[in-house]
Image (cartoon, rainbow, N blue to C red):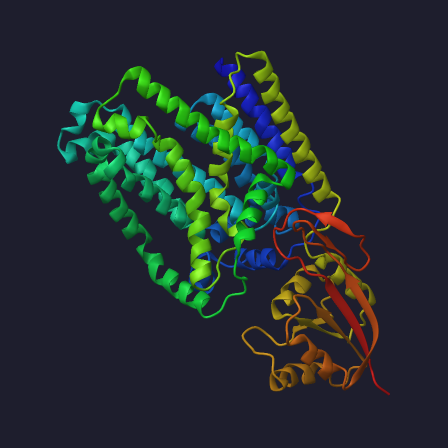
Length: 540
């Protein structure tokens, strides 16, 4: 295909991806995790880094968001736009990766599948680090593939030179690998599983590509030791974070249905999964047949060629390991220990699935007319599905609607009213959206305080004393909610109850929320809670 045509097609794909990722980006309210990102971005760089041990993610995304908000502001669109830009940059990089691993056509298919990915689009519109993580994982994998290709393209006599001579010849690919992998290490906890997948692939060379292993083992071990040194400042913090999670985490234990849910979410929806999953299976079958044919035709009987060409291709092995490691390893850990498996955390594996599907799409012979029509039909179907899924998002509220809830309080509260907020972290959403500096929002109880009668009394009584009216904002209901209500109802009587509903998507389940019709939702990204605003007046 002519270069100009490849470039033109890629630009069309990037423009389509840009449209999906920026459309409706600032409409919905920031939910609690996005408000946490906002609060981190307001801090200085030193404070962000110092605060890192209290979080479960490395601080690089918050540092990026800090600088971003200095230019683009802290509105909903301003905070989320950095994720959208990261997502858009990932699209042409998927082309680069697909081309480096297979061909230009597979690169274009992979870029298109990512551009249409509903799962990727969803997190491109969220002020969290998931979109950034996918970007750096793809960049890191480009560095890894170029490192491996170094040992394919160099002549045999170059490998026989001393290790120091080899480094002088090849320092640029090695430097690219180190820099890109460092970004991966400091992006997201689950991105570490991608590094595990890379090491598993190289370790397989001991048996499956012995000649390649002999050529690269010294440089590979040296690189891993260097990366360990680079990551060492974070190791102690990571150890503390793991211990914190072990002491108690909010995630439920997964089951076999969780894996099916992950697969459908990666595809974007159930209907998209019915297309993408068969394409991935086709890729596996097509590569196996091609390798068997190549072996028979070439009569390759050398030790290295027989074990690699006949039934195993390292590029396909890389995609399979990349897909499985960030999914199965935390899944097994969640079954055996504290549950840590949450679908959106595994997003570093998404590009592997889409590259497999792109390889499957390339299995059709474009010289055959009916296969051309089939490929066009598949791409058109995925485009229609992507449009439908994203249009449904534009027409539905998914995130907690804090903006509307706080606007209601602002419009109705008197200047001497107190507003209690439970759970404690939701108070930051209220202070972000309120336009009333004279209305006091108070977490009940504040952060790090357990809900006991003593702590409730300590923080409730000073604000409630002398007031004729107060408000209670409830979201993320816990077992302590009833204790708070009971204490307030000793002095006050409830006179109004407003519910601000939002919905969460999940498989094959009908949800009913107040003021909202029933519907069948086919994707679960996170639990989105209703917000309940109660108004009380003092008993006479």
